[in-house]
Length: 115
Length: 113
Image 1: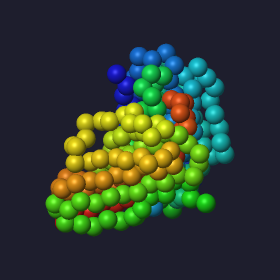
Image 2: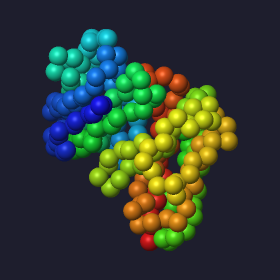
Image 3: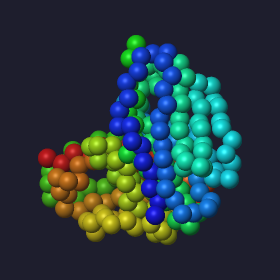
């Protein structure tokens, strides 16, 4: 079974604080793919990153970084020096090797960044 | 320039009516999807088409019928609308392959009175 858990329902931080959004996944596939999406208050879903299960290198893109750890089945997302524009709902998703493009989304974490 | 476009953006209608939502993508993708996002923001796959063929059909009432006239279009028709159908419906597209990111439209907010 495929499953994604985002235990943090809502997080509030003050601008310039660092914040980490947790994502824990379950899968029996040996090859799988993990994704993060951002849904700002305007409602659209924006693709942020994809990670393959065989590539455990962490990735940094500007203020965003992702920490993939197979040992703990986690793919956490850190925003450094958060800004008000980072306020959004963030979704983690999992796609297995054999389920033909089907994404399993977590329930999302709402991030509030206050000025 | 819009990559995945859905129309209409808002849909307000009475219970029992029939309505359609259209989706078009200009990304050259061969797989398209419909998702439902409920009031708690939970995203649930409804259907997926690959090259006009139905690939994923989750447990969705048969009042919902997708139609894919070609690879670039996936429409959703809903018969006999019910209060519980109120949600945001997202269309998405991708290339074939489980490693391919899905690109979403802006969503259609359906409100049933």
